[in-house]
Length: 136
Image 1 (cartoon, rainbow, N blue to C red):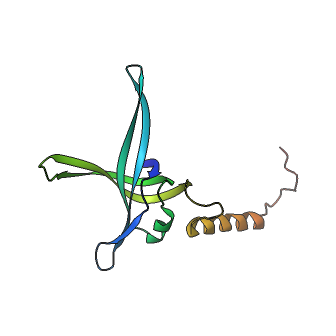
Image 2: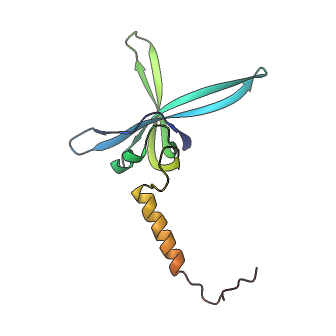
Image 3: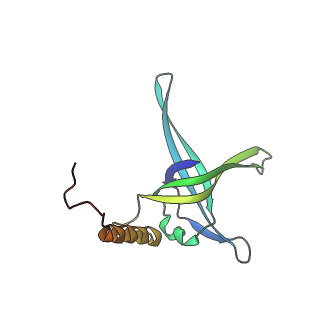
């Protein structure tokens, strides 16, 4: 599943056992629709977890746009007033930073390395049998 939203706070790295760490963050997804001729807005909040690399936490800052891939879940619980409550959770397997709070020129190490590799590959690429002028 893919979701896109804005970070509601800076990500936090938590230690859940002696050697396991998880990045926790939440996003807000805004939606607009018409009902009875009136435009309405709704915001859905989703608590997210990412287990693969805690280094990403420093780039997940409040207000930033992210695109997430993973699976959604529901956490049902009873409140202190014995009311049934639930929250949405998202077990994230991939994160794409879409912008928002990063200063220009700053890229996460992973993204910067990918950009360097693509640039190097393009600089070293040669196509056999093709002259400098393309026929189209």
